[in-house]
Length: 121
Length: 111
Image (cartoon, rainbow over all chains, first blue to last red; front, side, top):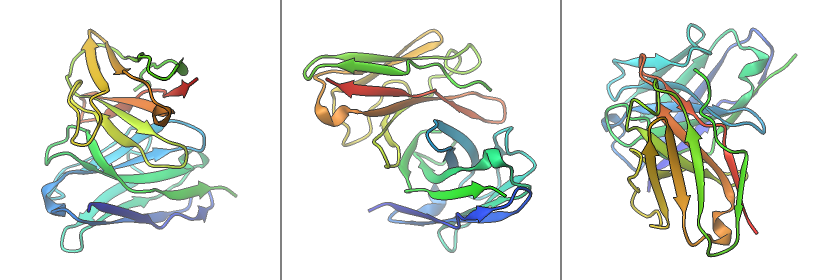
């Protein structure tokens, strides 16, 4: 059974930093592109970032470019999101999600339950 | 990148068919056959219902179907059931780097 379990979400002050983690199991982690998608409270979904199967390619939404860094450790079946210079508008439930293949179709067939990041003073 | 436009709400009676539209631009929906649809029940993670415009993942009911014409994609739910009541989001590949854009979301109500 595929499982994605996010962690690391907390309350942080504006300008602060945070690292989210996503532990994957039930599939061959290093065969797939992975994504982070967020959802502000009561709002819609927003794509945040993706990382290729080998970590060699990373891409970001304009809203987080230069502030967030996605990474993965295939030896630990884990995905990460380093979030710096946090803003109040970054407050959201952050999901990690698996792409259906090793490319970047953006078709996300498995999602975690999310971890809540609250940016507030 | 602006969000794709979806109707805020769509409703139907059990057994009926409903269609949710997803309007983008020639830079996203109109240029790529990479439109997906997600179902999200309250407090739950999204679930992939349709990918690559019209393909259904294993385990998804054939009551769900997708199509695209020009800059607008559509999700049709036939034989509407109470369990279909949820929020639905479309998503399109938008090129440039790459990037992806989600729709504004549609709340489906089963009357």
